[in-house]
Length: 504
Image (cartoon, rainbow, N blue to C red; front, side):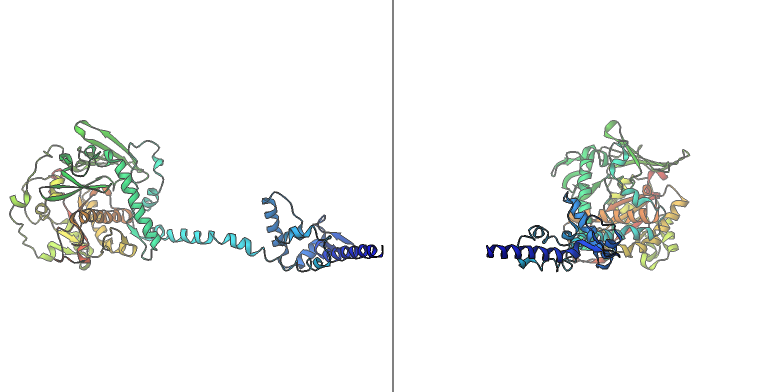
């Protein structure tokens, strides 16, 4: 009996000690020395004063309350300070005096939950950094001189924005410019965007290239496309004819942006009429044959005025003339540095004078756009500007952002010429060095020409309908070497207006 009474007394003493030691965590004392239960009366002034004296108490309690709400239960505030000791608090009165000191360290575990929410908040911070790294490109674009500030953002809108008004949603343009300090992830993102665009173009070939391109397989002879298909890259098809390679592509890709309404109407004979209506009311009408070759392009102003840029409708588009053999070598009676002008050493006025000059020899007849594109002898009738101000990395059609201002003089000269003659047609040629296969370099050079044209359009406001792009691969090396040569990875500008039938 005596042992039972002693055990009972020690148990009671343990309970009293536990309650006494735990009281500071759950109770406060007011000015009248009245104990206040802070669990039942958290807004009591004594409880509020007590929380102020505990560092980070309120912040810890708010965080713990949020955790308790997420778990669907309301926990006792003294237990919320430490997630692990909470289940041990319920059997506290039952154990012997070994657990009595546990309530004392409770103020110490309270800061422990604070790092936990911080750790949960930490992962979004890298994500914000990645988003910030992806934003400098458009911010830099806004800082560049360009005539139409809204072009790039409009292109970023969803394709569904056309709302069914377009028969063929325009493929997203591939990235042409990246920041100089672009990360490897950003470069890979640009490459992936290009791959996606190519596949999208493949799905819309009937409208973007022509009916003859639908179902074209490698090895097939497709006269409408210009020869035997030897390579298919989605957005471009390489054909071979008489030992020469030619690249076929969507001839209207430069004209489309996300605010344009695009409609395609099928005409007789496999021809198509594509109408692009811009937000400002300007319409661009392009008629192409079944192989995608441009037969006519017209700009129609909101007031109804028509400006014919290309018109080969009344010409025999099936005729094939080897002008390189038919015509004698071109005779140039002006200094060579005025016939081929390096943009790096020329002023803006000199560049303008070059592209505005008359042909160096008489134009004995009118030519189609296809003939001008495919004959170097015809193109040699007009002067050219070599854009040696920018160079491309090996195997790439993307330029660094710091190179964009180097094209300003050329773009401003083109704009001035178009202002003077709205029917001006500028040919942007792309070239590569001799590293790589002929077929690969042909497609790559065509994309480089498109890159330069897009910079003219997006950064300087050059009307897209006045530009024609064409790649020539490694056919015309500036530096005669088979090695990698940056000077051969370039673009060239010619004014071919005087050679086209629409201007005669």
